[in-house]
Length: 186
Image 1 (cartoon, rainbow, N blue to C red):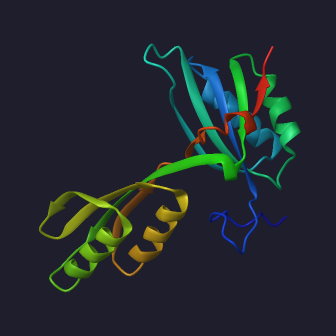
Image 2 (cartoon, rainbow, N blue to C red; image 1 turned 45 degrees about the vertical axis):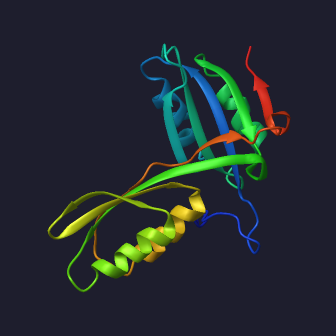
């Protein structure tokens, strides 16, 4: 069975093929494993998963899941998530109404020949240099998934020592919260 190609972001030429689910859960041991296990058992493809406490008292956590729209119907995914005891609320945020951000960190090998061009890439992408030594730099970009994709493509021209992306987090745009479909759990 062929798996679908990774989603590289919506453009004018490609349709949106993902759902952004924001799942509020009780912050208890094993909840993330149960959520991830649910997706694995059902064969739902996760493109991105990010989780962090959703409040200062850390009673709840928000899990942002970007899921392949073609691997399973949204209703089936929500129905299965809703069965999990520790799930408090589920929201589907339409990609056109979402503010999506991701963090990219990359350590790139540098030398006299490529340092200036790398600095140009950093400057034009909106990235920042966060660490430097004699033979490498670590840069950071907090931006849209498509901006991270573009920077990653630009960095293919350099020797990458290490590159890591966090996965997407998303909130509805202001004034668009009503367009996010909320699935209250019982």
